[in-house]
Image 1 (cartoon, rainbow, N blue to C red):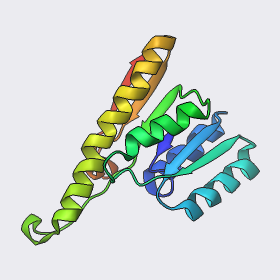
Image 2: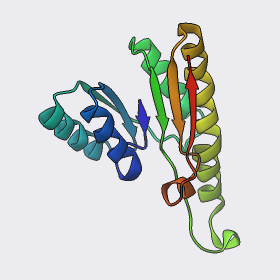
Image 3: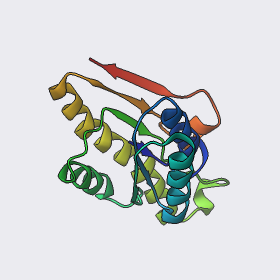
Image 4: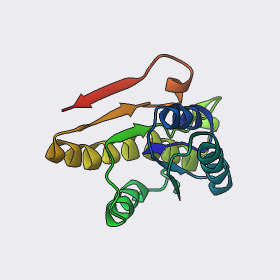
Length: 149
């Protein structure tokens, strides 16, 4: 499962995983872009690809995503937390809504997904996660990985 898969680093990682033979769950805010990526992956790599439109900057959305994925019976062996949001300029000039959304997406949702899917991976004895912890991770080598066996 790849969050932030509708564009940027998340979309590119989706193509890499598909090329390596993985079926995918793509998560992002832009349903139209997710469907376009799904169609490209299906055409080029023949992989099963499911899309879920979700805005992880909304409080509680990460838990709802986990519940939806598990209720559908999907088993997530690989989690790429690629969704991120950033704002430019003077922090005091930005809206509090932007700050709250960035904090929820870049911090809270990342940790919630990490814990929920991580616990499932530990129970199964397999899985791994790639954390792109902030929008800064898209511009630097600030990428964290965890392998679980």
